[in-house]
Length: 366
Image (cartoon, rainbow, N blue to C red):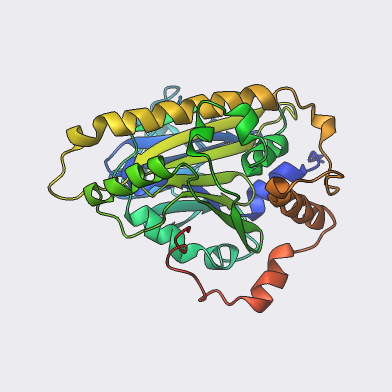
């Protein structure tokens, strides 16, 4: 009898929710791939020459790893016995030496669904993608359609539990202290937090009037539908954030749990928005490079402070001392606590907010 190890809460979250994995521009040519490690599993999405396939990054023959690194472009080829996959088919050398039936050879795939140009994946989701994203699905579709490409893929470990990293990303209170010369240059006004069940969208105005006017003047260079004057942060429960200032570029951040409770598999990707037809990429190169430099600095600052927070400092209980800039943390903990107790926090939201009631875009920040 095989005894299966108990499934961790982190694994349950990974298995039962949809997760934003990639933008279409990252997988727009044969052999392009992205790869992640989540709760002891690997997940890879690749273009097999006919379609995008998401699987466990293992050869079904003997379990050999296929792709290395976080992203790249290479054919699907097992280095052990030269099995290969292309256009939905497995090619097996010396097939005649196998006495077994090879007609059922398949990859161990994930469920996939496109929401506009964003690819979502799930193992065993408890509800549909639109139900999980009720209230924000149309917004995400709008954002995805305005992205031009992926210009950066940055990944490393945070030396903390993933829940501490997520709460740090939800926390506006720390910005003035930790990000004095980076993110705090925006002088962000108090955020307006809108909760859509387990997910949330935050809008914060740029408090520096001169910087706000300067950023606003750049809108003519872009071909985007999303119009919002300020900083937007979207938390897709449990592990993912999508942030932007004025919609000119997007940062996709993921805080994936690892098998080590004191370590988080962090990654960030930088997506410039589509430019107006008369504007060349060279015109905006310096602007995008500066935005990317700030993003990298902010994430390093976050990693350093999160490393000072031991795993046992976290609890699903509401924080005893809570500033207005930390209210999203209370919402996150309530969501986690409900799931730990076997509840379904999204169900109550769906009962009062039909899936069709998605806002096309956030209201401008005044």
